[in-house]
Amino acid sequence: MKSLIIGGAGFVGAYLIHHLKEDLGHEVAVTKMPTERISSEGVEIFDLNILVQEDIVQLFRKVRPDYIFHLAAQSSVSVSWKNPQLTIDVNVKGSVNVLETLRQLDYKPRVLLIGSGEEYGHICDGETPVGEDNVTRPGNIYAATKACQNMFGKIYADAYQLDVMMVRAFNHIGPNQAPLFVVADFCKQVAEIEAGKKEAVMKVGNLSAKRDFTDVRDVVRAYGQLIQQGKPGETYNIGSGHAIAIEDILKLILKNTTSDITVETDPQKLRPVDVPIIEADITKVTEATGWMPQIPLEQTIRETLDYWRGCV
Image (cartoon, rainbow, N blue to C red):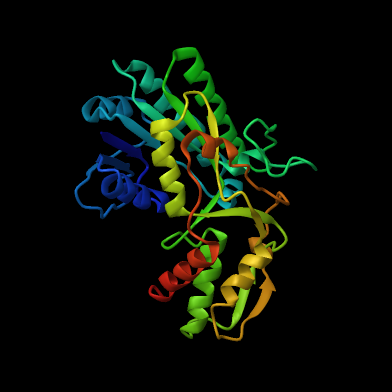
């Protein structure tokens, strides 16, 4: 089997490359932006701007993958507030360019569009844990673009008989994640304090929000199983099935350090709108593939903290 990862230079891409190549034995091709770097050996690497459809057409015809994982996205909620246009262009126009290219091929690869648990947005009382058929009420620009991608994926699968499946991936974490994201941010700050490179004050945002966190290695296993066993036109939640307050995440991180650290709220880390709770119902993916998360949250946090200790 040959797999193509669109947008493989990021956090998830490195783990997905390893899983497909080492665990599943696939040939792997990966795209990146010209300014990005991918250090994985034994994979084909291509520069690609998904806003240029003709470039996508040429790449698909050259590589002819059996499986396509569409990871390319502007994936930061905070960046989406600061740069809505970029987020809309990459996440909506880029995804439609991929779907349009699939219509031009003389064969039908299986495709996984990567969405987000943020698509559910404002979850009402009685809707937690949230299932795939729940109404989506996006609460930020990033979430709105991913909800739009999901709708396009469903329409193209049904109308053009494309072998496209969608996932809504909830918060995934682990070593090497950028500090734009909360767990990596907290771990980086602790490592800097321990190393004496930062005063012993942690800057935090909203600690009351509850999110569903899963180790990235479990997430890519789910992707690998869904690309083989998922049903075209369907959406699958990928998460732990359990929400935890950001405050409790912080406590788990601080439990792994002997440094005496003060915690302060930084207004710059507060979002204009923050959804109180996002928690996944993962029954559908489990029934379809047998997948379940395996790596405990405490282990992921320890390993992420150790990663940042090695970086600062």
